Length: 431
RNA sequence: GGAGGCGUCGCAUAGUGGUCUAGUGCACCGCCUUGGAAAGGCGGCAGACCCGAAAGGGUCUCGAGAGUUCGAAUCUCUCCGCCUCCGCCA
Image 1 (cartoon, rainbow, N blue to C red):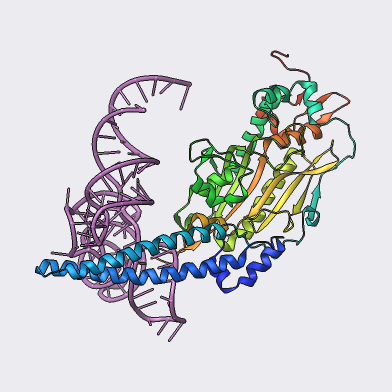
Image 2: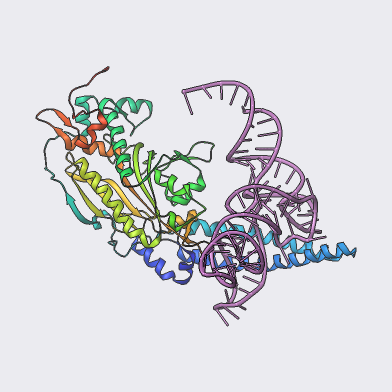
């Protein structure tokens, strides 16, 4: 949520930001008039309540003296009726106001390139060789050679965009997770396995809920949603808390499955496990003081880059344009990994500075010294590894067609009992 | 799932319809005192919002919501959470 005072005092800043985000149709004037109306109602009703409190005190004093209070009580009755009808009206306006305010996107960083879509993203750097056509097999073709993924049966049990991971690929998935947790532990992150379901209040604090209807699953007859990412659970974990600055920054390594409806993705990436309804992710999450967030953001990106390098996945770093980024972050870097079968870089990592936007909706603050004024802190999040997507990149980049084998990256071998490659069907039933 | 108990300022607690404008203790912060500290003294110590240029004033919040009442921390209902016991269960 943005600071309502900025909107009140500098509405042109908000309007400019909406324009940069291609959201010119946002009803900003309606929001401003709702704010005015809400304050008018509030002020008027507060005066009435102050009056009521005064008369109430008078009544209690007179009762103790044994004087007659019937006149005052009649007066109170009228005031109370007025107050409750005003309260009702205020609530209605307040609700409209809040739901509109919560939809205002975060201010974008001045470095963010302005554009309509991903074509305006700015490339920062590349790493690794990207042979154009090393082989024509995609990750599903390769998985089929070694019996590593069963999409057909998953379609039968669960539907499209589900999968059974099998054999060495299931093991490699957990290897990746373990490696990622060890990697972040060395960098001082605290491992967190969050609840996989959140209530509406928690989710609404971490995201713009109206934009998430197409993304997150709702549990029937419960006030619960399956998490789309550990980010939201970890962000909401500290809602309504005030930290002292000596406890910051807080650096978490979240590990969880992520559930996504992908309702708006019909026809995109329909083959394989690149875009699926559930995947595992190790997530970096930071709570820090505002003046540290730029530095923390660079650190998150460099962690994710280093992780990619250690896996040997060729990649490039992109600074997302205003048209391609989410509404909550003020600045987002993506790391795109090389997918040989597509001859393209595809998003594997998203690394965002949300500034005080989430902290404001979740009311997470800090203060330098006891009894000083508390200030909203900054939150940042970055994928360290989303394992299913990364498995796609690994299968394709590490496949050696001449020898018909998938080479396991050096850093993962210790998590695979020393195994260095996936060769033929290992053991167990093949059907 | 069943039975019972409990949710009040960081912690502990007081409070059973109007004197609660929520008290007290601990912790914490500032000052005094001291060579320095402890102890002691004095003061401060929850958040949000509204009006105001400011000084200042006001409103709301006793787990959440609804109700009874002129008036609710206090009475009623619903929900949520926690604890104890029983049942079931990875």
